[in-house]
Amino acid sequence: MGSIYAEARINRPAAEVWAEVRDVGGVSNVLDIVQASSADGDVRSCTMASGNELTEKILSIDDENLRVGYTVTDGLPLEHHAASMQVFPEGDAACTVRWITDIKPDAMAEQLQPMLQASLDNYANRS
Image (cartoon, rainbow, N blue to C red):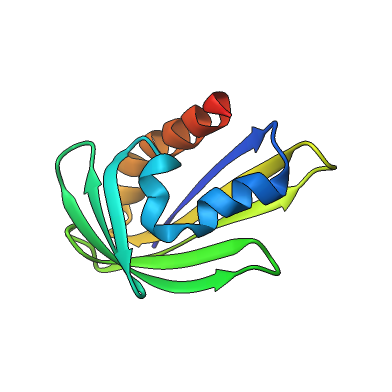
């Protein structure tokens, strides 16, 4: 299984960033690789910038640890996908967002890693 690690420091309070990350239906406001998004209960639908339509299941929203877990259930040729995005406070005015994805086939990790990191960097630079 391949793993993708993307991380970015954001010069905004963790509470502000967490409010955006935990809004699972609004992931398109966080990641520019997602063109449009919505959620109905624990099912999220995403239209990617590439035009792909993804369906994801939200596994957890953990307000104590500032972490969202999800899995892609349709839209990509995957054997396995599990991901989380977590916000780590750094004082009162900054935080780090860490996005970890475990994916199979392994080759997809190498293919997707630069794109996921760039999208997270773009979010940090907009903040």
